[in-house]
Image 1 (cartoon, one colour):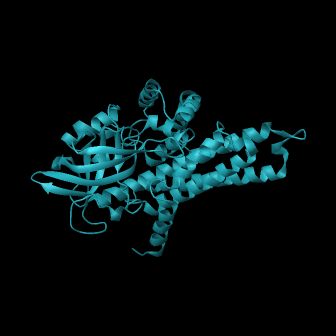
Image 2: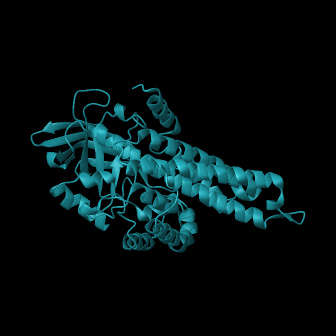
Image 3: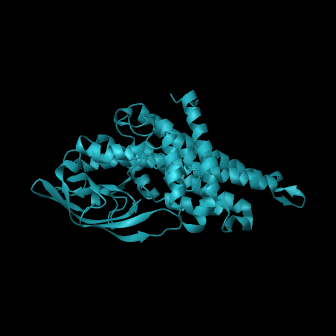
Length: 380
């Protein structure tokens, strides 16, 4: 049965992360919004502070040098980080859970420096013709002696161009569909790997297209056994979708607080906007939607902590409902602000752009519905 109370440690994590976001991140949101970037020294300072607070690698097991937090605690942190700009929250970027599987040379060269914050990782899965459908990946990794040669294109890659290494999913077998996929760690400076496009979107976020032209990767940099890429990918997406849901929850909570503050101050005919019943009804719907999204996000994390090997259905529900509901909540916040809501420089206008992209990230809403339906119906 779900326990809705937080432990003392979890409450401390929430308060610590909230303080970090409000004192160290929010004051710089205007800089990021006006320039689409942060001064390198500021980004470095925020990253250093996130490491000192234990936020950076909180999602990885203690035995590999991480914080060893359970999934619910990680979701609580993601929710608080989600209250600021998505690009700002990247300063507290968490390493990929996949890296916990690194052994020997992999651990020394990639896992350990990433945990220390000396290197940044990112996942390269999406392709021009294989977005939410991992089974359609066409990038290949053919054997050449003891190495692999990777050819193909990856696009919409978060942190593409700024990461030090990529976890790349490629086809190593002749099988079609979900069979024959493998995962590899590919250093960003590998010969044959190039950044062919920097993708600009409605919200500041580093995205790029990568081209692989016979990129040579030693077999020792393959993550897991050959052909286990789909299994690794799905486990990774379960986690990503839960954290996207948590981040969307943070955005929705920020929008609600902005709306509450605005309607409490804005006067119409000597009455504050909050005193009107239509305003109160909209605020009630927003608050209810936020809490409902929180329940699904925390349930997915709780299910993971309960030892479930896969949480695809729960993660998809959390991601689908949280992002869609956050869109509705933020839209209501904009509406309550009236003309001020669509004015550049207003936080709710920025939130409106941030949330729209999240309904597509890590599998569009339509894909989440397919996953939920198939699992509910018991069909492949």
